[in-house]
Length: 264
Image (tube, rainbow, N blue to C red; front, side, top):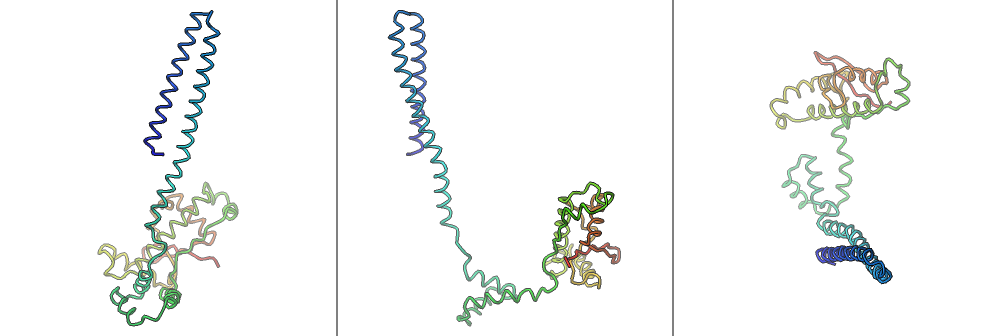
């Protein structure tokens, strides 16, 4: 049924319902004014009430139908939208991404595909396994969360008001800082803004030192939130993480360097 027609029909039912109520009120007034004819009035009231019950039931049925129709309408809309969503990425796009990782331009990639048409998809499935070798020693920053048992094992003066959620949120922040530093260390000069080049050089000098080489690290000056800041709470969190073996610290030049450790 069209929504406009359903709405019009519902308005009609409500109007009829209101009319029946007005008639009932008139009958009650008439009965009180003429007690002798109350028997006849009561039969009329009974008929009016039955009619009203039918109207109310019809309204309830219509409301139920419209309520059930709303999810169906949403489902049809989602189905129509899903027609335009591809079920998988095109094979050529995957090929270009792999070639991009090897430093080839899209044009060179297409030329290579024309020259080697019989390599098949298995060739590209094998190549990603070799990519990590180019980034050996980097990977993702460790996310070595603490447990409630470890936190409870600390002395009360060290634990203070720290909660498990605060400490693990700080670990997330440190991993974010470390990833940003790793990207600056690896980025070529032409891809860096001029104001970032000096910081990138400083981070590269730190990354090549014996104490830090091959590890993810953050500087004390990196700690600007949202969960880890260089305030009293942040210093307490660093003390806990150092005590639990999640981080180690060293000083290189004027920088206090915090190294993220991995589970042994």
